[in-house]
Length: 410
Image (cartoon, rainbow, N blue to C red):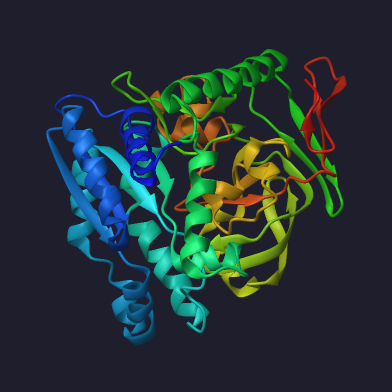
């Protein structure tokens, strides 16, 4: 049996070799919480061993962010540090790989004025728009992995003392990212090949529309003729393969901006900037969200949707079966990185141009003509369950089952 130190070392290796796939002479940005120093040092060592030119660090801390939201004025919150945005933008323009190590931030905004918390999210999206655009268009390699906190572990395992709760959470993370396998890198290759087969089948079907049906959901999503399905495996502008999310269980694409009609209800909480938004219901007409509500966090949902015009539309459609390993764990993780890989999901906001044939080379005007939504935001919310049925309309107008009871038909 591997020791914790060995597992953590493999986790770092996976982030560098499979996730960001760091190349010789490449710069690397590591964004991480200060508590994750041990993992960051391992990631840094693996990056330099892979030939990285230099590794830069973007440190975060939920506690410090909370203090800033409590004590800073609204004017200060609106003033995003220009130097940080400029630094990140300059690095991705030079082709730097991005490795994000995240915590969930659950509870960080408890007791915080929701107006200030929403402004903080909006300002960050605006300031880092170019930086995120480079990532979402796959011009650079990027990957996201998770780091457990005591608060998060206690939320998932409330009956255990903190040390055992954190240990159990690490074991779950290692299992879901295949670190517990004899050869994690090969295990990921096998898994990515399985997802690639689902992508191949869907692209062969070339459905014109999908129809979602479940309790609280009756939604139809149309696609532009130039769309295609992708998986967690991507290729950057230099031809280097990388995996953006670790773990990943999804096959995804982009909807036609004006082709979404009906109502959808979320099935898992959405953790948005540390605030949980629960039981979301959205109604669409010709692509635009015309009505929204939530049982909890509705004020934050309102601010998210009303960020700008593009945040009234969808940018992603992702299919994930309920028998994925993350879903089979029976846990709600309160972090999108894990929960979106346990459930079919949709995303409010910006579309991935990579899901259009030739999309990465298109101008903004061309992307608009193909119905690719543009927005400052991209926020996934979960809609999958064991009660979800999905049908696809073929080119000749027939409807075929795609999901039944939350699982693939093919």
